[in-house]
Image (cartoon, rainbow, N blue to C red):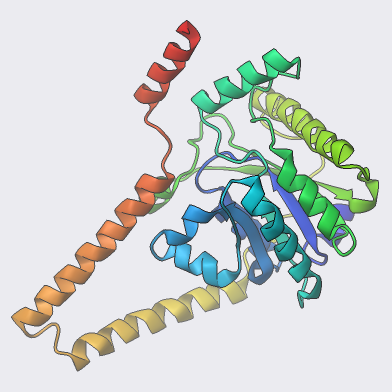
Length: 301
């Protein structure tokens, strides 16, 4: 219950497993439930900010963008982390240290790598890339009191959520386990911090294995913070304001009463559909048939 008492009331560095394309959305929902959505920041790949609407939003939101080249990213991470010292309210900084979403092909590659190096072979997570994690701990441990080790799982019988399934209004269920570690508990040297991160993912993998067998993480539960009435009012207000603005815009330029106006609206709608298509193609996981073929080919080789 110590975690529940402090969550949302302190600076925290979040370390979740990267399960699907809606992991960012799930971290936002979690932050919203605990009152720190306005300060829920993330470390994401640079290409994300070029996505229509979504990318522009997270750019304005202050996300940290990486090139996935340590020579370019090291100084960028250092400066970004140090700038957070003056953040005016409790923030959550999320880093997906696996570096990419888990797919069957990527899991197979991680298993082969672990076996070749004599490491524990994962079954539900990938092997973490620890350089960014080490940098985060080094540069933020003086003003960030905790690391939240977050494990996300989908119960049997439920589909893994995706942006496309959400737009299709297909329900799913997700379970989240949170364990708080004080920054003071973490080791000092870079090598020891990296090993600490890898050990957490070994534990996370064992936890997910147990979850698949039992359908739950354990007996202790954090009470559901519930949905905020304030968030509902903000959503309703934004929706009404948006529709009213669209109506006034169409009326001002007579877009609904002329052929030219109808053409402009049709072009705008087509552009919106194109943007959504680009977003879905960017985020969706590989087709199962393609994944199976690639997996079989790797096994043969």
